[in-house]
Length: 265
Length: 262
Figure: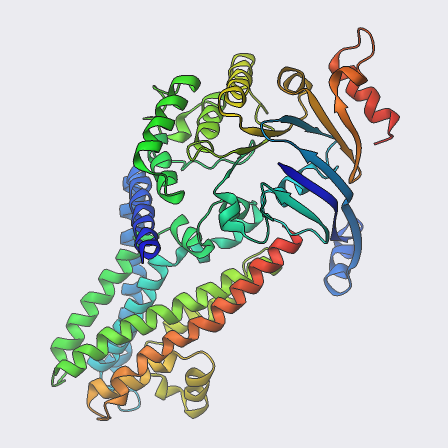
């Protein structure tokens, strides 16, 4: 327990030193935040114009799609903010900075996570929150405690899922020494496709997104529950299942570290 | 006490000839060459000893340091550092060692040095009291008072190196690895760093393993040198033994390299 507390304390310390570093470059921070906001705003415009022409996409209305997208975007932004260290991990391995991690008496993942927090993602988060509020205001969802809980679980599960994907990305760097662009299909790609409930892409896609990379668990199924199209309570806790996805990712990471120890960089 | 016995380590390195065509070819078929970074390396270093570990580039110095600090696992052989096997129990091991990589900084670039130190305090879970005593002492000996509140990026190389060394001693390790600590430093900084290392070894009985290409470092700091070349220990003795007449230390070592054909 003592050790856990200590780890958390160190994590907070890492956040604080990241914030302090960032404050050295104030204007860069502000501009990036605005940029992030605008990029997501673009996507929002895309949806808006689409719905000017077609009033429904496979039975989902404008406000429903906005709600769906905003939740996905929040999940992603949170994960990207806190797990950014994995995203920039390839440079860390290439430059041999991972050696430094290895000579410190702390968990490697904690140190890599601590190496970088991308607080500029607040911009994207902000855009997501605006859409979220708008989506809620326009939709006719009957809010219950269970539904609020569902959203919280979606955020937790989604963050875990994306963090897991970032972890795979980092683990592969041990073998390739380089970032792998194709992994972005699973992160940025998923974020973009996640605009619409996965159901619109057909049955095959839903299967893949349930059993292989479980996006549907944090997006499609609980979303149906939110809209009242499903009523079973199972849908509320389904997003939490996505946390299981992190275990194989962690396994891969362990293999990567072992590989690093035997071959160096 | 450090013992290394019959340690071997080899890497596979991809090779290809120059040119775009060859680069394309190597995408599909790669020729690997096995490099024996260390073959049958054995030595013992006592507590409180200061040892210069020298050899030409690519001789296997870093590989040895990496094995001793728990970063790499050797292919075969045994290694024991104060009763611990470095790569088996990494966390326990690294609590008691300090590593300075001359070419890689461990300080946070954009924040004052003291912020990095405080982070290190939490990383090593250094008790508050010990942290203050150590900081006080290091600050005194390395003359850091003015530097601690400056962001790392605004320090000169010599100032930064002094901070780096302090950073790796905050948790009072009993074993210190210095990998080219004086690289690129001016004469004043070099002397300051050397003087500090000597003093540290004297007062704290810290075991120091020093790799460097600067033979004045070796002359000033260590009585014992271990020479490695092509992955093998070629010589383990004192500087006095190999020095002939009036030859300078650089000439002596160059002569040594030539005689072993490395």
